[in-house]
Length: 218
Ligand SMILES: C[S@@+](CC[C@H](N)C(=O)[O-])C[C@H]1O[C@@H](n2cnc3c(N)ncnc32)[C@H](O)[C@@H]1O
Image (tube, rainbow, N blue to C red; front, side, top):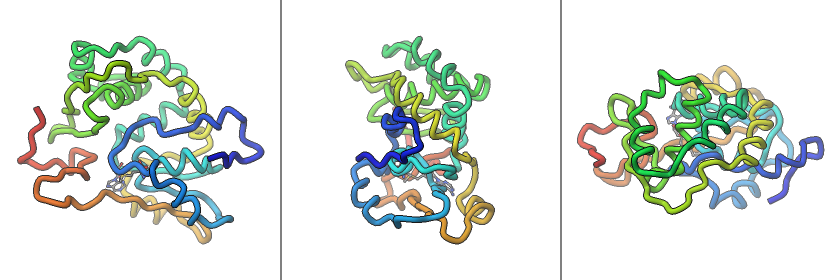
């Protein structure tokens, strides 16, 4: 889909979601885009996740938000220090030992760029690209055993960085974000977590606050 704004640099054609994210809308892009108004004020996406629609539409001056601080750190770091994020990723290896060592590290003690690289690395190499944390907020998805996952996609990180530098990135609840930012004529894409379809479905658990006590991975 090529909907590049004339004034955006050509390298923005490389923008795509940086993460595989539960409920990501890549498969529905054509349908979603066909329903968007031709003209609108600002683009606002308060349940951002992997941001499939945003990375396809590439709006100017957009506002994106999520209540997951790890995700928000990732997008802010790609905006502000993409070269550092790339440098960390270029040193990471797709081995079980490296994965579990990285998973065990406390991302709150890392620099923002290193924590962002860790988020991308774990997402690309963990089982099925899932994001799950325990009650302590520790990532607990096992190693994915993929042969050759793309840990570093430099072109899409550089393109995302340009787009994200032009974007307001907020960490918070969607209601606050809408109250503080939404104005008449804005386009607001709301893609909230789904309700579990059964007692055991935990599809919606994106943050430690949504952790179900009875759930165990590994
Ligand atoms: C279904 S996912 C969005 C998927 C996204 N459209 C995509 O293409 O990847 C929902 C997102 O909402 C976030 N979220 C959950 N509760 C929230 C809240 N109260 N306010 C803001 N974001 C929230 C989750 O962290 C998750 O990233």
